[in-house]
Image 1 (tube, rainbow, N blue to C red):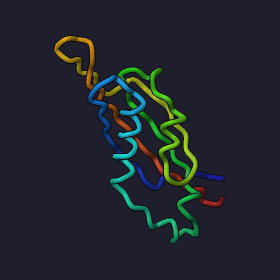
Image 2 (cartoon, rainbow, N blue to C red; image 1 turned 180 degrees about the vertical axis):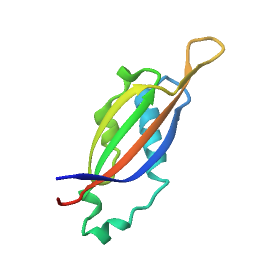
Image 3 (cartoon, helix red, strand yellow; image 1 turned 120 degrees about the vertical axis):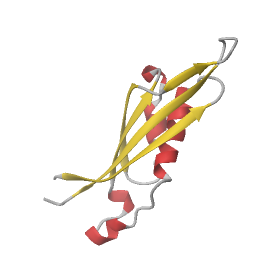
Image 4 (cartoon, helix red, strand yellow; image 1 turned 180 degrees about the horizontal axis):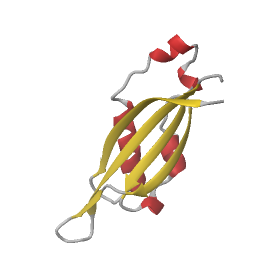
Length: 114
């Protein structure tokens, strides 16, 4: 089995209050997914459920992102998620809250059958 990269999309998600890093990550994946509408898989004899999705999240606090919750946002296929240091965290004036900005790279792969 050889996986072939077919689509790569980027997205950004923001959690405005509460420092919810998972929420920011889920919003970033949602943003990336809604930049595309996949229809080509029919040309290669596949369905949307055949795709494998690799998600990379850039978060200021990687250990605070629930990767299973992020993968659960995928509407089709099977997914994996890794989190690296990235994004931004902008504290409020009082320093007791922050806006968290998270980035996502979403790669869609299909098995070429070889």
